[in-house]
Image (tube, rainbow, N blue to C red):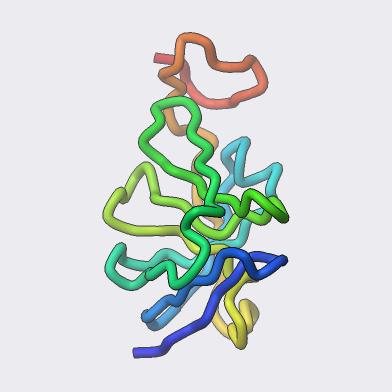
Length: 130
């Protein structure tokens, strides 16, 4: 098992990831596209917030199943609980010290086609409407 130390830009949020990262992913949903996310999928038990849990801000939209966490000081996206795999986190690989995202394959994942279930959804959110 490999351990990575992770943090936001200002260092208020610090976490560790105990996992072997074999690939990184991008997603074409509206949120991931705008934040230009490159993520590593890790099991829930592999991610531990070491410091700054009180500085995590939660953003949820649409079904509110995915939970996206950002530092409330510097605004950096650090990780999110996945909608399609709620027992896993997507971790911002650029927050991981010593991890080279080019050392593993990059896979594009499809989020654009995930259903939009919020009756107040913005028209800019792509995806089939329920």
